[in-house]
Length: 330
Picture (cartoon, rainbow, N blue to C red):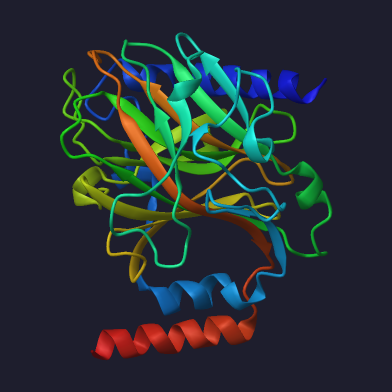
């Protein structure tokens, strides 16, 4: 199957797996995070770095700040691509379900709203959602070759990105970043955010979800977990939010981290996923809408980075324990 064919299957699997989340109950069909999620608590940036062994970013897979990327591409202001399905700037491909063929829905902006990470570039990628009640939009980058060439033992895939959405938009849109496996059917990990308050449910603006391939009482598939349930963190409306997620190929575990203070502190969650042994195909920036939507919404993405690490070693875990002990005493 060619690359575009694989992406199509992946999109169909995603749509089928989470279609109910835009049409039903108060948590939009998501698995209630208060019951099945494991809340890892709060971490400073240094604690998170110790836990993930950030100094061991031995396999840098891909990074983009929308001025340039790690493959050597330079980005110019304007549409990311000329047509859906055609390779665009930096090798990014677009895909759409429903009404999404206007290429101005996927564009490079000349500047960013204030507050993005210093030194992370000046341009931004803006994705505009459908203005109707249906339609998914995807922009994907193939990472399969980089993943296959990673250093031996670097079996934890990480994705990090920044996003911004206006506090005034009314679109019932959901936007974020996800990673698919090489079969195109499993969402290994990822996160997305409700950038507008739903008119048909109690989902609040800024509600954050985590994606995972998961065994839910014998039903294995792609599920979303409401990370904001039960008083959990919500993304900044009218400001930048930092996201980090991972997938452990060896164990299947999926972790999600959210920072609303510029990356100084994170709240973490995990589940034991069902995709152990799977390999990474691609990363997708993703947008969808739901019942009651009547207007388009924008999500602006800043710098993004994808890399692989080994499991943290004993020294890193000892260091983390010391940091946590000092934090408790403080």
